[in-house]
Amino acid sequence: MWLIPGFASAYFLFRRRLKSAGRYGQIAAVGRRVTAGVSALVYRLPRRAARFAFTRPVRKSFLPKGVPVRLTFTSPSKALSKTLGALARIAHSARLPLKSPTVATWLYFAAFLLVVTLIVGGATRLTQSGLSITSWKPISGVVPPQDLPAWQAEFENYKHIPQFKQINPHMTLGQFQAIYWWEWGHRILARLLGLVYLGGFLFLLWAREIPKRVIWRCGMLGVLVLVQGGVGWLMVASGLHGRLFVAPEMLMLHLFVALSLLIVTVWTGAEAGDGAPRGRGAPVSWRLGAGVMLGLIVGQCLLGALVAGNQAGLVYNTWPDMDGQFLPRIDWSNGALAFVHDQTLVQFVHRMNAYLVFAYAWGFAVVFGAKCQDTGLKAHAVTLAGLVTVQAALGVMTLITAVDFHLALLHQFVAITLVIVATAFLWRVARADRVFRKMGF
Image (tube, rainbow, N blue to C red; front, side, top):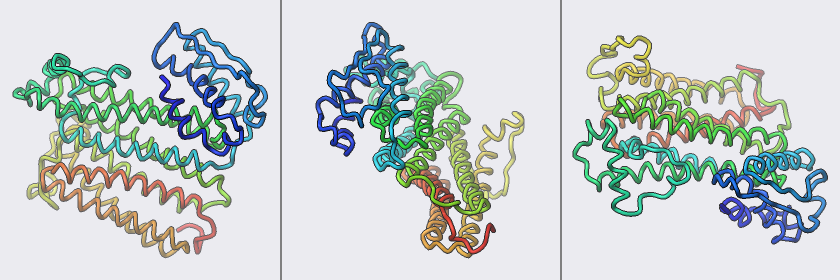
């Protein structure tokens, strides 16, 4: 229960704002009391009253006027609502910084943890471990099976789903434990990610560290991480009945929310660290061109999720042709759903879009280099195009090796790196000013 304030007190309370107060013990106690309401709600303790009081005067610059001196709550719901209300009053009445390296560091750490979670999720998919845990227990699920009967009970739950009956009927308990740990680790990282986003946001908002213009974005990150958790469970649930694997469209949606969370996190971190824009930025046409680049890369990642969800990387393992053909026969019996469920069409679209991304990346880099006078921005554009080339080569190698585990995982890592680099490039272009030889293309 005290994980949030304990972690926060250990790291954030030594910051310059809290150092000036000179009362470390008192401030740490206030932090524990403020988060008591949230902890009570999360752990569903209906009879637990959340109490936090400022027993002695706190420095006026630290606690703005209008914040109650003593708050007593009798239920978790009231605790949460009044805690959020107090935080909102702090944000409204305080003098907030124009930029904050602390907030930028928090967001970059969250982005790093999100990348780790995505890579572990990719390994979970490649090892077919995603359906090993057939229930969703946000709190009690943190603790894995502790003895043999508990492991056997989890194994029995797995035996009831189609994946075991049709693919793994001879699986042993030891083999089940191997895939169980992948899924358990992925879920633990997801919980830790939620704690970092939500706990960090609440604490930094209370500490008046978040610049006012990015508060709503940081709040949106908390909402996105909760949505991602719900989508993740819906994805798992789609594979428990009537399917051998999770639904490809749910896998794509799960990745889409994760990439959206990553993009907003990186962008907001840059905004918090650099402060408000000091110029008009690049012409709209250049910003649009960089935005199209990011959109094409994200779209290619989502098409890759469809390929993975349909096991389409295990067929047509030749390049540049598809088993000697440009486009093999497509099963249109399901109509437009073929774009989501047909292995041939899904892989073909993924290939064609890869060619488009490659051509656009290098074309944009050449034109951008001719127009832009900023050496750093030109190098960034060429780096992005180079990464696209590396990613294309990895894609071909992954295909012709029938999805080698290490190549596939590296392919996913470079894809995530591309999303980050493209986001940073778009942000820099949006901030650029007076570095172009003429307006637009």
